[in-house]
Image (cartoon, rainbow over all chains, first blue to last red; front, side):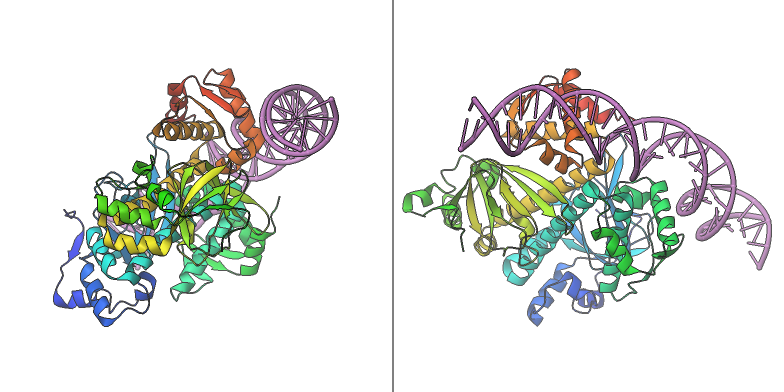
Amino acid sequence: MHKPNQSIIPLTLSTLKAACSQCNLRELCLPYGLSEDEIEQIDSMVGVRRRLKRQQHLYRAGEGFEAIYAIRSGFFKTDVLLEDGRDQVTGFQMAGEILGMDGISGETHTCNAVALEDSEICVIPFAHLEHLSREIQALQRHFHQVMSREIVRDHGVMMLLGTMRAEERLAAFLLNLSQRFTARGYSPAEFHLRMTRDEIGSYLGLKLETVSRAFSRFQEDGFIAVQQKHIRILDIAGLKALLTHQAI
Amino acid sequence: MHKPNQSIIPLTLSTLKAACSQCNLRELCLPYGLSEDEIEQIDSMVGVRRRLKRQQHLYRAGEGFEAIYAIRSGFFKTDVLLEDGRDQVTGFQMAGEILGMDGISGETHTCNAVALEDSEICVIPFAHLEHLSREIQALQRHFHQVMSREIVRDHGVMMLLGTMRAEERLAAFLLNLSQRFTARGYSPAEFHLRMTRDEIGSYLGLKLETVSRAFSRFQEDGFIAVQQKHIRILDIAGLKALLTHQAI
DNA sequence: CGCGCCTTTGAAGGAGCTCAATTTAGGTGG
DNA sequence: CCACCTAAATTGAGCTCCTTCAAAGGCGCG
């Protein structure tokens, strides 16, 4: 069932134990206030870990759905394809976030998930998750919240795509990244983009040239310092003002 | 807790019995193959019905979340608001569809739900739903699928907003409505739009004038016949071709 | 029957796209 | 370790599709 080109970390006693109870991303993936007992059960829910190299697919649209995935380290994008070849990046995901929920509704995944850097994920067989969340109320609630959060996030993207101009979209994008990096203990102001201008553009409904121009404009205006994929935010308030002070 | 201007249909024994087991939308709301016993349990999950008049809010962004809602009859829109006043319609919902899942992630709803015609909804207290889906596996699975379907739908809208030109967006919109009306036993080719050009435009990321022009263009080209809110699709294949034969 | 809201249509303007050329960075093999 | 090579990013110029602004027409509701 697993791809030969994806390295599987076998479930020894020690890696098993480490699955969730030892994981420093626990507060991102799991609810608070679980008992020792419950955490042990959840540990056993995580089937295997899997490492992916940059540009490897975690899953593809059309593949059978069996599990969802928690990102332990690394960075992903998800995208959907139209028959005529057009595609759209639907999201960028980082450590502690969940991938694969698009597959629950049908038998198969509806989008592709691709690692944008070498990454490690925890495989959570979905049948097992459903079984456990019938037993552990906090887990059930948490999973529902994770799915709902994805819906709310999508609404935000729809708002961005539907009503914002190019520079507002990019500002919103940068602020969102900054906030998520911060939540993971990284600098809010300085980070490396894992994706290309083209991928940013696809996500934001813009062409890569427009993204590039907006970056340059932000730099001229002193909001950020850009050097290729390296971003330093110099004026967070300024970026936020771009969003609220609606330019029509 | 309920709004004084919303009529509540009290839960008498007869309305209760009618809740799901007698409902002709059952196959849209609920999984197949439930036992008599399970359906009875689910019947009891539906708290009350509520009628809403055109333009009434079912819930508003910021209101506490307590229940999700199944549309028994009528038509709704959901929209999100930005601080600066811009808003975006995130969806149109019809009979058999579920509203309110945006509220699960936090304590409160994140969007507004407004009836676009006189409607009737079933209130499903969320705590009750979670309780029951811990007992009835098919219900649990079904609810997960409903949430996942919403995520997949949102991805489709993102694709539409991110990559399609105006006429493609409108064609996709009409085809989607047609397909959903068909699934409900209505004509695939002839229907009344419940929303204004402005609301369609908001949903599609276009201005109302652009929507109007695209309607006129479709009529000129013989794809549809429009008279205000009344739509008759004359050439479904033509509309579909607009989507796949990517212009550019 | 009149008023307001929704819709349609026209004309001009602009934001972002397309096409194209150049620069830069990162990876690879000698 | 350096030179090469290719993919990614930047920047410019012209164009296009959608928006904006404006005015007129139509439908529904009180």
